[in-house]
Image (tube, rainbow, N blue to C red):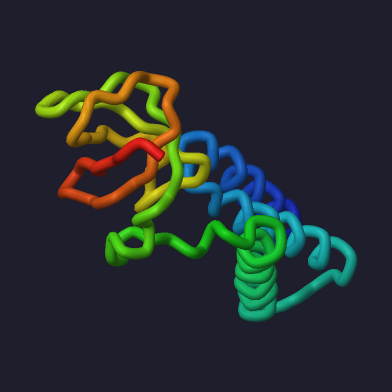
Length: 147
């Protein structure tokens, strides 16, 4: 069976639609790679399967790298698994009151260790709406203090 241009078009659209179920925002680039191969095969005629797969792989990886390097430059820099010293000093906004021995909630402008909203602890009572500074990461909580 010869792979035709429309096979690639259907596969590309299917991958783009699969992105709706898998919110990783990566499948869309492989789908666009498939649509590009469909265009190349439609314009050039008969290409071997190896050449088609090579074009798809290179195009998909190029789209992915282009997205993460050019349009979303900070996206590949994840701090998950990094040391907490990288995030100490970040400023956030308290969204729920915090008091000694009571958990609150803080929201950061950019994701800290993979999340924007964190349960937090503090040594003193701090009202919601107050800007706070992250002073430590303690397991699944962050410790904050008033600015």
